[in-house]
Image (cartoon, rainbow, N blue to C red; front, side, top):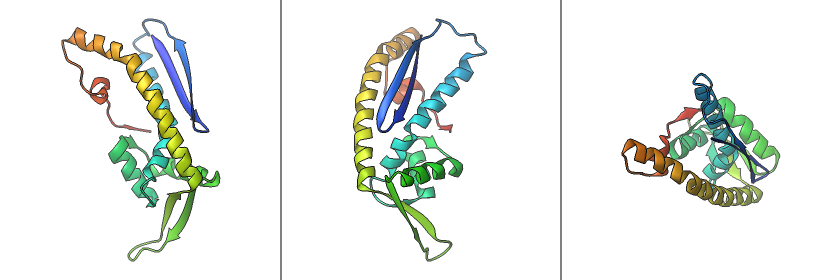
Length: 166
């Protein structure tokens, strides 16, 4: 079994592949799978936030809704705002307070040119990387489907993707 760990650092995907024992003890496997999935999702957050802002300005809760609707990333406000503040501090986002006609003012975020460039580069890297991984795991999922007597569907159907909170 292979263990793949990937992180995005300065727009570059860094991966480490380790050979794992063939069978993990039953008590360890679910916890390891959950940790792996959480780490994978966390590694994608910066790219997802930048991508959510490619169409224009959004305030924090709108970003959360876009991420949940379009990518199945379910985040809390306590997770998204530190990311937005960090991206703003490094010059990838700018923000402004806008008075609402009804209710309280909202802080809107938008990409700077550096943020737009980073989003494009991250999307290019992700597309290349994920295509390679899909080719690598296709035989694994194909073998599982053949064993269970099923045909393969989309990658989401194959992986049994469900929403998970980070």
